[in-house]
Image (tube, rainbow, N blue to C red):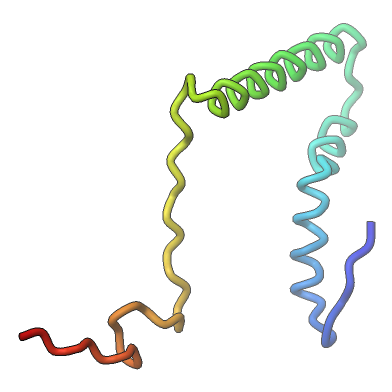
Length: 97
């Protein structure tokens, strides 16, 4: 896994690395490998993960076909310093008569 460090900004590169590792499931795998997992427990866990994946795929398919409503997206809060519509620095509104 490779992460570029720009302008000697190691903190930002570390955040990117952690996010990549999280997506790949490395942290989960490290936690599982801390202790021995019996083969029967491993089979049970893998079956449960397969069921979860299948349910998720079926739910996504049903949403695409219109059988289930699409999930509502949460509105992200505006970042500080971002221009707001109608805020200071916005273009003046034309006068209504």
